[in-house]
Length: 164
Image (tube, rainbow, N blue to C red; front, side, top):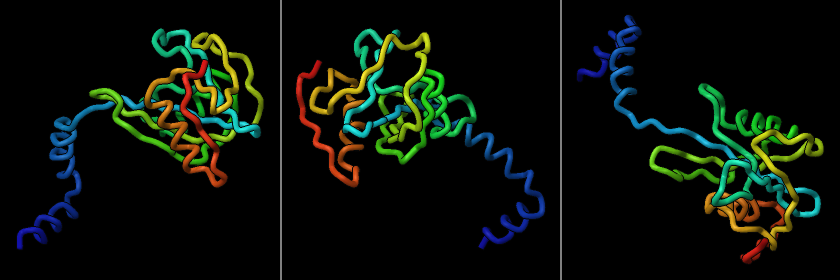
């Protein structure tokens, strides 16, 4: 069996694993990662923001792209602070999806610890929307809200409607 001698060699000279790792890692697909926050208030309404730079779907969940070497959960909390001056806690991941050829989105259920503050230049506004009155959203955002509602300990009813 060749595995034992190779394992012994690599344990003695661990730097030998770097070259195959570098070659293998260069051959793998590269993705950008986006994060979105689902924040639901005590009245069962979801926080939506009006994005300045999203012409097709102006209203959606707060969020953005994670930075290099940033943990996705830290990224969603950073985005909430940067965009809304909103401090929050991450509850859990509710949805992950490959939404474009080289892009993955993660949606996190978050719990707000304070009120929304001053908005960043990326946002035109925000509002707390009743789940039955959701506007036209990106498919991923709607699916994320539905997933958060389905995973809730006390189910929140989400009706499909044309919305705003």
